Image (cartoon, rainbow, N blue to C red; front, side, top):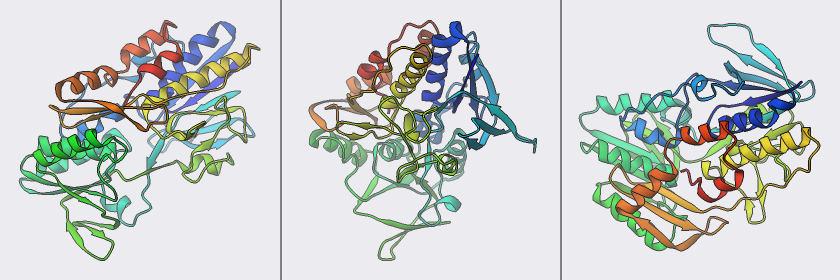
Length: 387
């Protein structure tokens, strides 16, 4: 029996676990999945949760039912790649449980980079479902006031537009160093700017936040921007767990992997999704589910092929698009070259809404197909445009 351990039950971890189980169960594979929570969190839709929308609950145990995967609930507190052991802490002060493994897939993702003073103490973040719920409750308490969103990337823009649409009584301020949606082409970016103007969002580009206070955000130069609630979307980093375990990581704490997605320092550990620094011909991939799920499936296939004595293929991935919601009634899709630079083509309005809901809808149908062994990795490279 080969003990295969997957850490993390997000989009990528669940895909990797199901794929590994279906590929190895007839050959002695035993898959264990570790999750900090019993429910599956649709991180791509946390901005909707923050705006007060109630999404459907999906139990992870139900998602993986029938696969033979063992589910362990708890937070990973230690990883020992030399002894091939992981320590998982449950709730209620229970002692940590040590789980041994032969092969490990690390899919714990990233967390908010809280290195800016005051972020950890005073800002809301999207590290898990509960924190998005906390923000929703805070906004529900405000009759009037100001919400500051720090970060002008896709997550920041989606959040600002979602909150502005759901809470027209609140003033929404978007603080960004560059232009919002700077990675998009000129026409798509102009459409984003018009949408934010229509929703009454105040955009402050060229703004560098130096500190988050309980009721304000401090900018370089000392200016204070009043805030009744601050949402921080300006950057992520890997958990310290990997570096503390002695795995080779990059400057953002992501595990550095080879072409098969194995850790460069500990090849019995595979790293996938946001937690991995995956180099492609155009550079290191950035974290999105568009690329994350394919890494999870490829790692599971590489692991299975290695166990079965088959050649292990190199991972190759090219981006397709940048889907961006602008509230519940508008969206824009920027089509991209494989290196994620913008093409001329883009969609807007109702066509963009339909497109985005198709490619970033619930992953449950995909998981059902995976359980039947019907979805190849190549399909995700073409269609899994999650954002």
